Length: 302
Image (cartoon, rainbow, N blue to C red; front, top):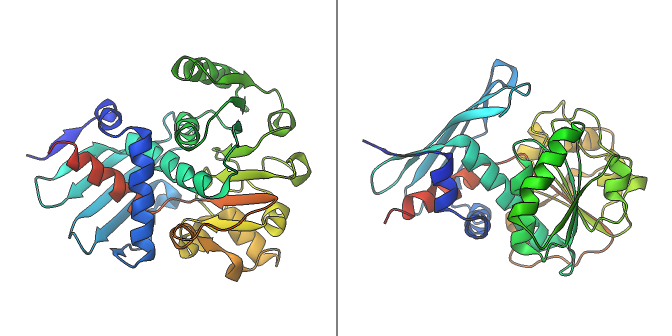
């Protein structure tokens, strides 16, 4: 019988710092061509997603199947199946997905944000939000977090919960997006919005922006002029971004962003770029991230 892990067991086995390290390694291997990673399969207008990756050096593979309902909490349900040298492993997909999505944000923030950045604006209070904060705290000395959500009650509850988890960090709920962004050094967007969350003029001149919420061509969290004027735009994988990121697709189509200027995360890791002004990381999620977390889960029982 396969080993089965629920959400709590996933989190107990892989702390966020370990997840960041595992996902960083996976992107380095992805850039080196060590993964076979087919395009994500989408069924029912995006209601069912299937992602898979095979790591050629080890022979290990992962398959994730998700049911997605944006009007449901949690919006995603499903399973992650790992097949390696030992017994198969089945893990809760919500925990794996939020953990690996937080982890890739941590990798990108460590790459692109100033070393002293410690003020975070978090837009969104759904299932992904808490791990976005945990990821930033894993790579930076986080001091202040301003949360903004269209559901203020959810933002308040999240601020209280995270305040207990990070007592040295100051959490506040911002009534407007502009208030949340005013003095941010890092911005994390984790919503299902189909229209940009803010105007580029609301951002400080020097800020790193992560956007992980949108994963369909119809969804857009970032304004196109941010992508047009940022000093660097990093994506998890160029082909995936051009297929699934509404922000990237729109900006390229309108001639505001040259697809040739996009930088893949794995390619940037060995020689971190010198950055100035505003920087952007856009992620739609790739299966190598799930593989990284699943490998860590499999190793945790050895």
